[in-house]
Amino acid sequence: MKDGEILAAISKGEESALDYLYKKYYRMMTKIVISNSGSEQEAKDIYQDALIVFWQKVMSGNLVLTSKISTYIYSICLNLWRKELDRKSRISGEEKDTPVYMDFEREERKKIINQCINELGDTCNKILTYFYFDGMSMSDIAERLGFANTDTAKTKKYKCKKRLDNLVRSKYSASDFLD
Image 1 (cartoon, rainbow, N blue to C red):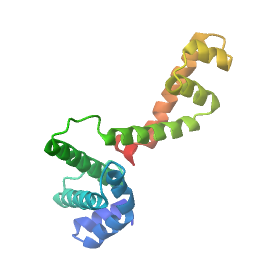
Image 2 (tube, helix red, strand yellow):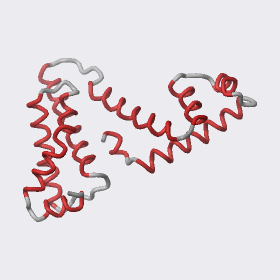
Image 3 (cartoon, helix red, strand yellow):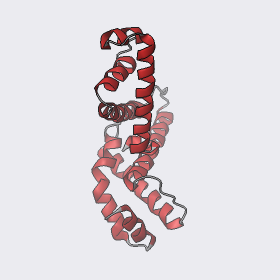
Image 4 (cartoon, rainbow, N blue to C red):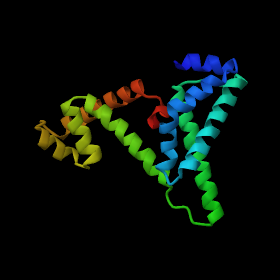
């Protein structure tokens, strides 16, 4: 089923669409919880709650979907799990360190950015990797890549970053960063 068909079926009250969503995205959605300090049962509960929230939004007629259904449900799951982690933290009285899900999100963003950088071509790939991931100075980059001077390297970095921004924006919405 396509996203439009799923939304139409849910709007008509067809629970088979909900069953379809449950089965199709079960593994992806429960992975959020399990990979972030949750149990299998907590993962199931969060996913079921997320589907209920999604169902209610569709049925209310107030849902304006700007991303894929999977992305939307993923963000609901992530938000519900964050709330649960915060609740658990308050109950246990522990001080909150940086929550585990922040590392997960950071890794997802890094993976998306790396995929896009690889599509930019060798020169841009090297410039952006050297500067942002390896922490090299612009003069070191200019020397390593054989540019005339540091200004040339800065200009190329600027153009490559602009291309990267455009590529990321064309391929992903903000909520897709987690899908």
